[in-house]
Length: 200
Image 1 (tube, rainbow, N blue to C red):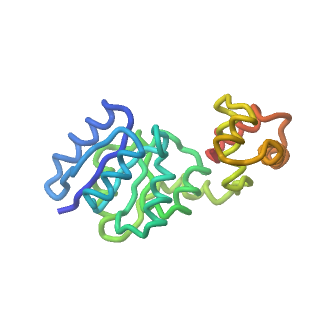
Image 2 (image 1 turned 135 degrees about the vertical axis):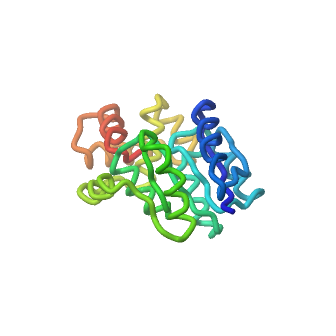
Image 3 (image 1 turned 180 degrees about the vertical axis):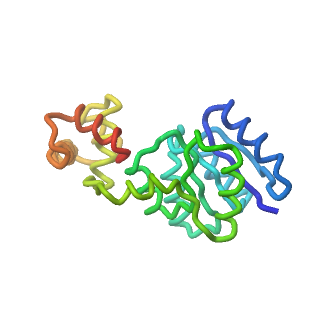
């Protein structure tokens, strides 16, 4: 029996996934949560075989969760189920040790089959997306990504500096580096482009 934890912030989608997986004779839904921090607590408490997670959630994103699981060397496999068919997200997911990356518009039966593949030690990744993921490299480093994400959410350089314990000048440097690497005119364009590519 495979034990699965679901992390999805949309209640209807979370309920549908739980109902779908409950129909499978070899899958037990051990728990379901609505945000990344709750998912992290439940991963440690329930010790599921597989975490099925969305990417964008309050608290921690699915990718940040996967990175944390990898860093703590927990024996939990991660499968991302998302609407984002962006190669940048997939690259970052693979770097974070994710074993599966499926799109929410995949056929329902594909999810259970993919979980079985992952449980057996394999990988379940959308093949077209996998091919695309290696054609364009992500130019941003982690700090540039963090600063750009906060800037795009409307935070001033001063607020970002306080939040990340950096100096005002350092934040400005990270922003100008990101703008330069992406070849755009300002932080708003940089944020839009990086989001579109799946680099944030």
